[in-house]
Image 1 (tube, rainbow, N blue to C red):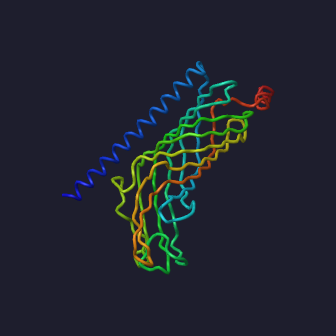
Image 2: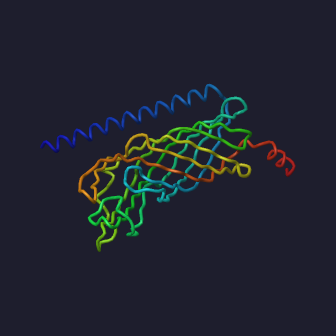
Image 3: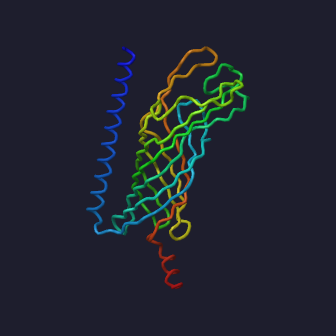
Length: 260
């Protein structure tokens, strides 16, 4: 009964933290929208769509390198404000595939945990999220834009495979949406966009989890002692963004008038 009570208590604490984080993010989004609407109403609201790839790793899982490649795509709304509409708030709705990956090459010391210290094990983790980023951008000369913000991610599916240096190969673990990974993920992000042509932009984004998505116990393969690591999503995203009815630089507007 003691273990059950501890488990229930831990779940209750996580649920309260989850609800508090959601409330803070919602309050931030609502406050930002109210501020922007007061600054620039009536305003020109833009729609956009983006597609690209994530290069991700999970810090704290003893696997190193941005080796997990996943999709990142979805629509967004851009609300320009301020003088000459150089500032804007972007709200996105994304499907984003994150995780971690390590090939079983059998040449160096294990970085996960192993019964055979001479070889390292393969590892595959897929974390699929629905994300809601909120970013404040500043656009210079209608050519380059930089922004910072936050995102809330909801874990919608997860799979985890490990290789224990035996004949079984990769084995799926008992990881599910019920645990051990948290369902919510809150990340801070920085974003840079460069215009390619008219409404097309090349976008690079870096994001990092603010609160642990998992706490895991590992075993040292040499001494069999254990150690605890907190885990965080660490992500580089490269995308192509198209903004509908974008506010174009003079050279594009002049070229369009000449064509018309």
